[in-house]
Image (cartoon, rainbow, N blue to C red; front, side, top):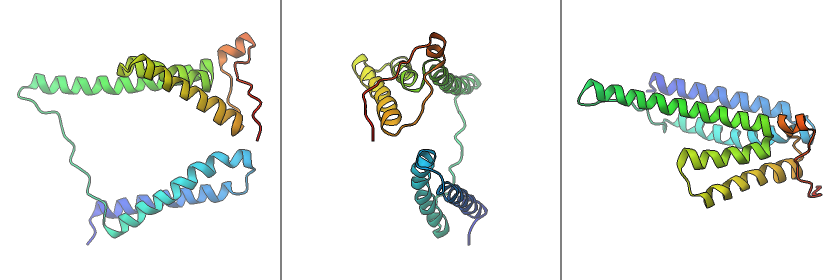
Length: 175
């Protein structure tokens, strides 16, 4: 006998499979450049969603865990735990807005690389060597792989448009 949450879980997963399948089907007629992202993203998502649907229908999905409410010996400890959770949430929102601002101002490659450096160094206190390696890897992945190899036309960034500069690498890679 299926419980209400199991039926709801399976129904939701079925809707996800149908939506992803319909989106993938609709994108099959697109050109290579326009269809690249949906083919990559949905081509991976559809098998995973189907796998989840099979698990849901077989009853292999575990019930949702009961939420753990902050508990303490006193009301002040519970209030402090709630305040800490609020600070963590505000921090996440701040980092997301920071990434968006960096990408808008400096473009995907440079903004993404610099935001990654700030995130790792300031957010996690990572060592400078590791931070710079990951920042450079982010920049190179966005600039070389996505822009030059996959030919995804990322905007250069508002600052570079204002200054009429082109910060993109020109490695002459053409596939």
